[in-house]
Length: 218
Image (cartoon, rainbow, N blue to C red):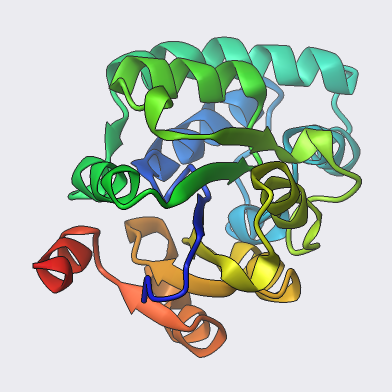
């Protein structure tokens, strides 16, 4: 998988860290404040959207009496303590990151999340040092499945797209990587198990966790 690879780019939530459970809980609590239950199609509907795009979607769909900046600030406050205390890396992730560093392979993050929350989780887990570039979808024109964020990370890393390998946990992210001209490895996550067949069909590779890659590297 790593042959001819000069850069590895990771999505964050559900891919590098086990955090999708947290966002489902936040959605339920947040919508409950305004008298809504959390629709079953919500996660699929917002899949791949940037933080700002998601806030706009919530405002319009649920007719919230808040502007998008207020929505985003509430979400930051609701999530940041959980990111610092309760979110953990996927199994084998840190060892894989260390292996990439030792192999002189550049690394980046391409996340739909907000910058403040990304910084909080990377710092609490002590892994910020492993990444050459950290980019959020709010920094590009369109969120996933558009390729914009992956193309920006590749450009910032000074690596051609065809030399990049992407790790993603949902179909929209996999499509974004493929549309950027990159190879993509799908990562299993509890909250996208119902999408496994679609993920396998779209991606070049599929892993249950990063421990599999460490075994291959031995």
